[in-house]
Length: 383
Image (tube, rainbow, N blue to C red; front, side, top):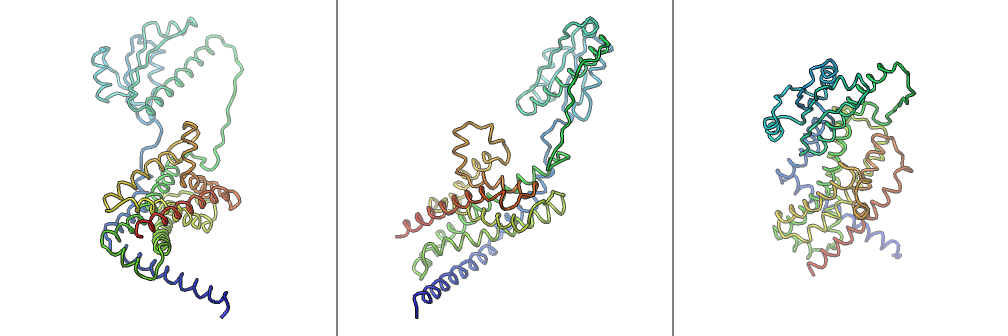
C-alpha cells in the first residue's frame, strides 16, 4: 500500500471520528432544554424585540415653556416646537418648581422666552432665549438642544428676510441616502442585534459544551479514547457553528427579511458561508474561555467578560472612528470588527466576494490563532 493511500485512509478515519463527535454534540445539546430555548429565543424573539426598540431620534420629548413676552413671535416659536419632536407644556415661572420637574424626569428641557423678545426681532437686534436641558441622557440632551437650535435659527432667518426684504444667497443641500433610503432604524437595529447574538452563541455554546464535559467527568473518557485533543475541540467548534448557522438562517431569512422587510441585497450563499466562518472564528474564543473555567457558572462570567467589550466596541452599536486611537488598534483583535463590515456589506450593499475578501481573510486568521491557542491550553490541562 502506497504512502498516499495510507494517508488517505488515515485522514478518512480521522474525519469520521470528528463527524461522530459532532453528532454526539448535537444530541447532547438537544437534551439541554434550557440551552435550546436560549438559542431559539436569541434568533427569533430577540430580533423582533430589537426591531421594536425605540428609534435613536427625538420623539415627543416633554419640554416646558415659560413665555414672559406673550407676543406673536413668542407664540410662533411655541407653535413650531410641535409634534412629533416635542410635547410642549406651559409651566409656572417658578425656578424651584421647574428644577423639581427636571430632577424627576417630568421635563426634558425648559425654554424661557424673555420680555421684549419680539421687539428685538423687529429692531434687528439679538434676541436671547434660555434653554435648560436635562442631560442625564447625553444623547437625548444633545438632540433636544440641536432640534431647538435649528427651529430658532429657521425662525430668525424668516424674520430677518421679512424685515430686510432682500433675497440673500443660500445653499440648498440635496441629500441622497444609499442602502437605506428611508433611514429605517429597524434595519440597523435588527442587524446589530443579529451580530451580537451570533457572537454570544458562537462563544458561549462551545465553551458550555467543553465545561459540561468537565462537570460530568466525561472529558477523561474522551481523552483515553483514540482521539486527539484537536479532534475533540474541532468537533465542538464545528457542531456549535452548525447550530449558529441554522439559527442565523432562521433569523435572517424568516424574521428579518420575511417578517420585517430587511433587505438581502447580496448573495445568500456568500453570506451564510461567511456566517459559518465567523461562528468558527468566534468559537475559538469560546474554547479559550472554557480552558479557564471549571463550572458552568464560571464560563458564563468569562464569556460575559469577552462578549461585552467585543460587541460594544466592534462597530455594532457605536462608531469606531470616534474611539481613541489605542482602542481602535486593540479592537482590531476582535473578529466581530471584520464581520460587521461583511454583514452590512452583503445584506444592505450587495457586496461580492472581492469586496469582503480582506476582512474575511483577517477574520479567519484570528480564528485560527484562537483555535490554536485553545487547543494548546486544552492539551496542556490534561497531560
